[in-house]
Length: 81
Length: 460
Image (cartoon, rainbow over all chains, first blue to last red; front, side):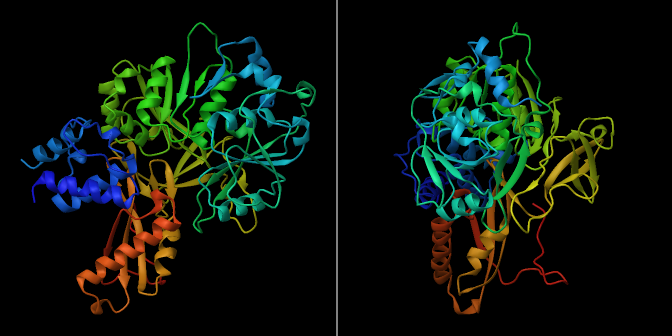
């Protein structure tokens, strides 16, 4: 499964677990309008750390906070390089 | 210490001093003649009053009026379950519950619903009495029932700066709920210094609140590191331009301090240590995580700090007095210091926070006692033992993680285990507040137990 697929699956799973309605994901979607709250994002980031072995938010290098879903995917894709 | 009532009277001459909510603005001075209470405020004289409200502005406006009138003001939050509310009503010996939206169940005491608009009060200025009102804040307890922390106006507001000169424009705002220690501090600060205060509304999205903060040209704003990470993730952080940013309620790491400095280069950024029990400990303004070792063991500081057995201890006039109720432990130790339970480590002349001694998990400023979650997991007949602990999160500081040992685990296939996990988590979601539900759960063959038979808890 690609990084993007894993991220999308995780968004859907966490939204379901948290009882939140996720809007259709696309790269220009602002994360704040995705239907998820900060706890949901925190769970997504921790779940991805376990499944992908990547934690770009805790990396020592400077990280811009992602604003859109596309930024979020790109952050993980570039952390994997 | 004067009652807050005198601060309301003083604010009559300062039209700008107001509480600004999403739906309404209330000039503080108006609270000397008007109230959201549908009854004569004199009826609250010498009574134990409990707020079980959802609207921050209604709560703030009404609670401030009752200082010096009510014997005890307990600020409960609207997320309590019926069982928790009943326990708080009983422990606070509440004689009256003030609510705004709805009550989940019948209560054994009188209730009053707040009005949606201010109404004139005839008796207000003459009802002032010199009662030293006790202020009670809620904090989470190990059993799942909240603990009630007793403060006075003196301990809550004693260290706050009094009336400033009005040449500098100061407009406060906070991401906090005013019923929690961090929010109440900002409310009292705004009241005493007679500045406007922009309050959040329940369930208000961060980007909407930011746009109000921008409209009202807020200069001073406080929140937890998690609140501020949420601000950065909106992509709209730069719509606000505060002069002063304060972080508290959680450990501020270097990453969030650096991100805020880069986003708001002109703002003074400080992080403070405060807790409901210990009060405000100190403020750090040099932009670095942790705090200078000089803060510790200096008897000349108004707030004395010590590090004993690796945890930070605080002695100050701002310590809470005690917990309400029977069979509660003391807040202030025999040495007159409050043990914060926060582990610190000295590195290169600076103390850094290293989690909690008791394993309490701090999720975006909300505390979770592992024992509460473990008790629920252990109720399942298939569960032998569980350990709930803190897992570091770059978004909200920490998340709840759970290791579970199943009875006769060899009988379960991986598919069975997945099904059991789903069932355990579903039960947690039905019973616990969302932040208390384990974000990560795994099955392990065994857990470490120390020689006295207790679970070995990793330091968070």
